[in-house]
Amino acid sequence: MKEEPGPRTEESSLEEDAYYSPPGRDSVKKKNRLLGALIGILIFTVIAAGIVYLVSRRTPARDGALQAKLAAFEEKILGLERQIADLQGKSAAPAADPQIVQRLEALTKRVEALEKPPKAAVESKTKSAPASSKGEQASPKRYHIVQKGETLTRISKKYSVPVEELRRLNRLSPDQPIKTGQKILLPSAP
Image 1 (cartoon, helix red, strand yellow):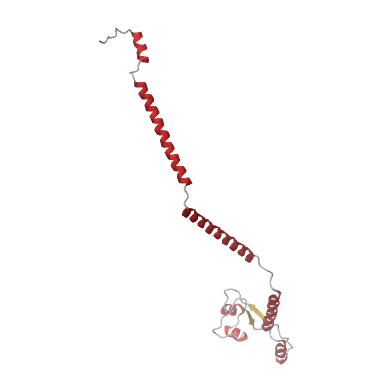
Image 2 (cartoon, rainbow, N blue to C red):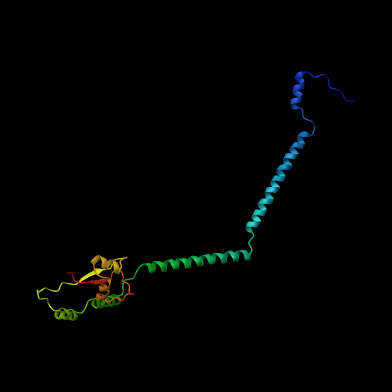
């Protein structure tokens, strides 16, 4: 038979409760903690092994594809560097060819010569024009340089000259437009 414990005193009851644990309960807690730790270590080991396996696993096809992409990028970079060098070379303007400059100057002189009336024709006109009885000298020719937006009508009003007379003096047909910078011969001043 079991003996029943005797009446407990308050002091003895506190001491026993503070240290009392059912039999075998501490060992179960320790086993559960140990089991949890072992499962955690096992999971960590499996994950670490999987990562190592995936990182270390290289297939030749995958390496070849990466190498091909890398080579393609290198080619593109080299091509872009060549284009930049070409553009920089083109932006530095080379010195003008002396032959072209000489030809341009010769053409400019010819154009200027064609714009000026021949001296012989001018002299013949002044000699053939009868001098007035009062002994007046021929006045110098007057010109108007056409500005942007000007028309023959506007020029005629400015100098009080009929449009038809300006056309006749400058040998302009009715449908021929005037251009900015063009010299328009005006009648001599009275």
